[in-house]
Image (cartoon, rainbow, N blue to C red; front, side, top):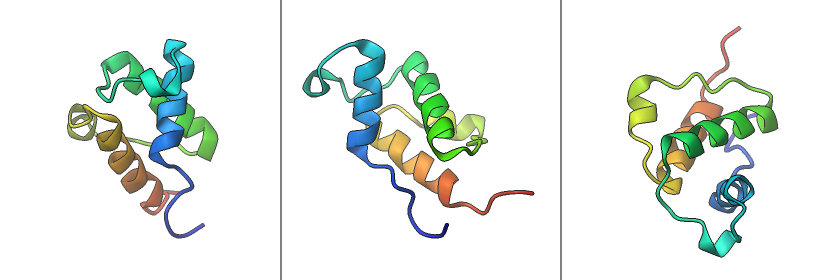
Length: 81
C-alpha cells in the first residue's frame, strides 16, 4: 500500500484520550514516555507493522504533531523482508 497511511492527528489524540480517560478536547499536546509507548503500540497494532524507531526519532517526539510526523515517515518507508 503506497502513499500516506490512514493516520491523522485526531486518531492519535483519540488514542491518548483512551489512555488518560479524558475527553478528546482535554488531551494535552505534550507527550510523555508512557503516552509515547502507548501510541507506538497502538499504531503498530493498527497497521500490523513494527515501527522500528531509532533512539533519536523517539527522543525527538515531544508532541502529538511530532509523533504523527515520525509515525508517517516510518509507515511509508519500505518494509524490510
